[in-house]
Image (cartoon, rainbow, N blue to C red; front, side):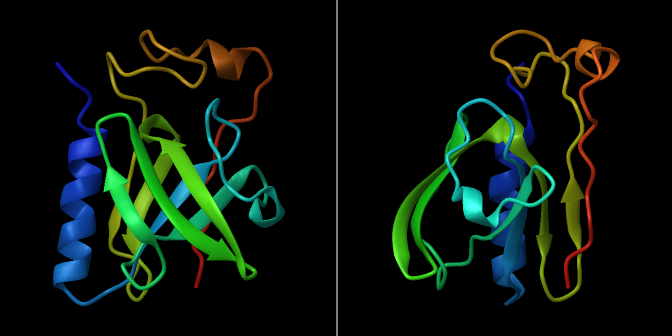
Length: 132
């Protein structure tokens, strides 16, 4: 089966917007293919506001989350493979979803089943912080 993460991202984004709240995504900036402004990455993660007022051309496909936005006044095209999205939540109340590994989903380094080998090789396990 296809990974469920892109479908859940689209649904939760719509749900958050329908409730007149602001959708934020937490991204693991260390995943291969992630294109985000490195100046805003903290502890290997970046939190992005994906509301219609903050981004242009938001596309959540089965492969990636893409949009253009301004960071410090500088326009940038953002590209985030869906497996790099760690969570989506509403800024105002924190309601949303944190994602874990999904069977059959590409791992951080590319296609293939997600593996727990990365934690045994000394890699740091992603963590999630509440941002207010």
